[in-house]
Length: 418
Image 1 (spheres, rainbow, N blue to C red):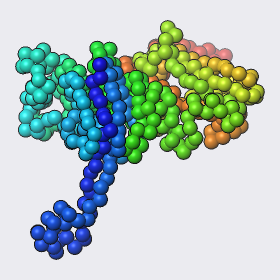
Image 2 (cartoon, helix red, strand yellow):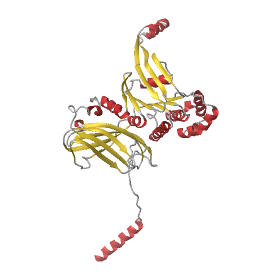
Image 3 (cartoon, rainbow, N blue to C red):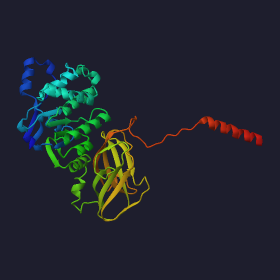
Image 4 (tube, rainbow, N blue to C red):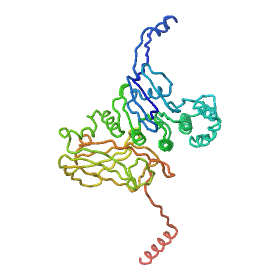
């Protein structure tokens, strides 16, 4: 069953450029100028068509201004298409803007009931969900306070909780991981995955590529208001990464061209848990294995494999290298697999984008043979500590009283010997 359908949808916005002498113009001239003159048309979307099946999770990625949020606003009927047709089959909830769906003068509790009513829910249905919504949002102390007094973080937490706990058939999410602390981001991802398993249709817009790959079944890349690429998350995300770095087409596409291929290419990068299952969800202290599958078109002596962990904001968090660890790798022609084992993940609750690279020893990163964006990982459960990581450690205690008496006895022996 098709839950969402865009059929040749276009959206045009009119941008008015007013004269610098506007202040000296009379009111009538200003009105006519706005209606008829100094107007430019901006097409946020052009002939966009796609379908989303029941229970599917669709990710939308692209640079700022590509049209991602416009797609969600059209789906949620915040704005109407200039051309084309949109079909929606099911009860729809959304978190598109931090304060969307809230009346500022109503309390948090009243806004929960308001949003439930807009979804067609009866009061007794909302009553059953209220405690879960408030607990998830962590705003129990402020639930009877007007939301205009909420911080942006409180807005976001309550907005996501309402959207995710009122049992929508379709859930639209726009950058819910861009605001809030790491613990809340982790809770969001966990709840989204629960909704996926329950059969909720999800449209997820985010710059967190690791979360997109971990959550979505399919991704399309928007570029200047048009669908530039659509397909499996890892291939579309790889294409996007190469596009951002002004590199040629994705590594997966270059595998088909032996002529243009470098000495070695990375085919895939995967994360496995202690049971050998591929996953992107871990907890602090879990065992994790990274498998880097490659193909060498010739012998590569003294190769170096490196793995980089980046925060969702693009900052390098940590880096592992066979070169730094003193391991020599000689790649024979053909396909091979390199494994990196981390007995205990040191990271606290957070999301990471991960990249792997292959280069020759002595060369710089800019001279690498190949690199590939991997499925990002999400640390969903951490230990009760402060900071960004947890290092395996032990505690020891000893009495200093005994040590001091032993030292005094030793001094006495020395003096006696003198």
